[in-house]
Image (cartoon, rainbow, N blue to C red; front, side, top):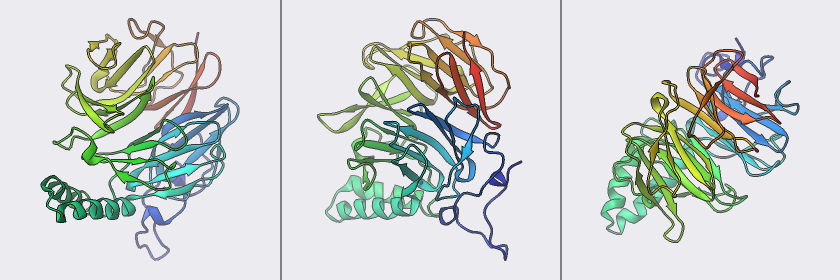
Amino acid sequence: MSSVASGAPMQADGKFVDPLDVSAQTTRFAATTQLGAIARAGSRLVAVGVRGLIVLSDDGGGTWRQVASPVGSDLVAVRFVSSRQGWASGHDGVILATTDGGEHWVKQFDGRAAADLLKAHFAAQATSGDAVAARLLKEITLNYQNGPTMPMLDLSFENAQTGWAVGPFGTILGTHDGGKSWASWIEKVDNDKMLHYTAVSDVGGNVYLASERGTLFKLDRPKERFIAIATGYNGSFLGVVGSRGYVIAYGLGGSAYRSRDGGVSWQRLSTGVHASLTGACVLDDGRLLLAAQDGHLIMSSDEGDTFHSVAVPRQDLITGVAPAGRNRVVLTGLGGTQIVNLH
């Protein structure tokens, strides 16, 4: 086991140190420590994981090296809009940013800043007599009553400036300056029940939020508001993937639903797996891959009409999948990374 994965950080006197206040520890086991997400940054692969771990590969996943991370909080999402500019997010409300392909990272935001921002935002509106803001202020106060622990479970940028970060209990923030500043979008979503957001994705120019109770939310750009979409599913979605011709929402129990009309109508897909789908990607040639929590990897060459299994070298709890060159992908999971060759 790596030291990166071993318990909460402690001072020499045994007292707890907040992971927000310490850098990630160095480990000799960069490629075999628990990783939560992976993304492609040009020809490079960037993966993030437990206790702030960030690792890079420049040879398609063959070898990995750790880079410095400013926090010790678990990281669960990573996204790039170019070969150089990207972001990562995770526990304690952390949002990190890089402008050099992942070599160096800075902390842009965390749960402390989120608590201050959201409380001030809704308090000001509530003081003006806004009943909705008063209700949301109570929700926010409850969310942060135990400190800055609320995670940012995912984030997505449609360009170098505009993006969103999401988490549980209806938490969503937006930025128009590349993450230098963030603002509440909580009141800009048709989500009175404060459903959790598990993912945010830009698919074919449309931005979707994955949520509970079979609900998705789609950005209405003219209104600057996310509109609720019913899919006919009753469970939780964990992600959204697709291209300009289709969008697929996937989640618990191998469930996947596809829309070809921008979310108006949905069709349940037969994935052939029963474990939760935890990762997905579309290859450059259009093939679709879905990864299941129990280690299954399935592929479709017809936008989800049919799927077939892909052999995975090592059974693992899979957390992410990313293209790594022609006929190759790299998976992340509890046991780190592994290469899967496709045929």
